[in-house]
Amino acid sequence: MFGWYQAFLKSCENAKKILENCDRLEALEALHPHSDPPSFTKCTGPFTYVSNPTGRLAITPGTQMFGNNVTGTLLDWTTIGASNTSIDCVTDVRAWWDPGDMIVYGRRARVYLWADIRLLAGTTPLYTYSTRRYLYRDERSDTNPDVIEPLQYEMEDFGEAKYRRLNVAAGTVLDMQIRIRGRMAAAQASSWARVYGPYRAQAGFDSWPREIVVGS
Image (cartoon, rainbow, N blue to C red; front, side):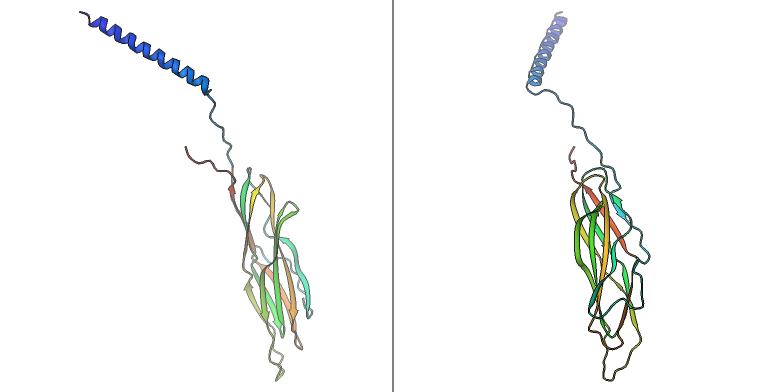
C-alpha cells in the first residue's frame, strides 16, 4: 500500500541528484568558460603542376657557334613551360627541371656545355645554381695522318635538376628558367662546332601546405 510513496521518495532523490550535478556543471563552467570549436580554412589545390614538353628552345643556329677557347651564352634565361601561381595558403614547394636533349655537332675539338638553373618569384630570383648540369664532347682526331673527318653529331640527354623552397607565400608567381653556356677548346685544324636545343624540356612544381591539421 505504500509502493506509491516509495516511488515518490525515489523520484525526489533522483531530482536532488540532478540539481547537485547541475550545480557542479555551473561551477565548472565558471572555471572553464565554454568556447566555440576552432575554425579551419581549407587550402585548395591543385598541389602539382607539370609543363608540357617544349619544342626546341630558342638557340639560333649559325654557321659556327663557337670560337676556340671562347665561352659564350648560347641560350639566355628562358622560362620552361609557363608561370605557375602557388596555391591559396603557405606551402613548401619542390621544383624540378628536365632540360631535355641537346644536339651537338662537332669536329676536331672539344665542346663543353653548361646549364644554369634558377627559380623566380615574380621577377626576383629565389635561387640560382650555375653549372647545375653539364655535357662534354671530345671530337678530336689523329693528325698523323691528318685526315679531316666528316661532322659528327649526337642527341644527348642533359639530365635533370631539383630544388626545394620552404614557406612560399600564397599566390606567389613562380617561374623555372634555364640558361645554357658553351665553349669549344683544344681545336685542331678544320675544327667546327654547333649546338641545337634543348628539345622537349619540362618543368614542374609539387606543393604541400605548410600547416596540416591531424587527429580528430
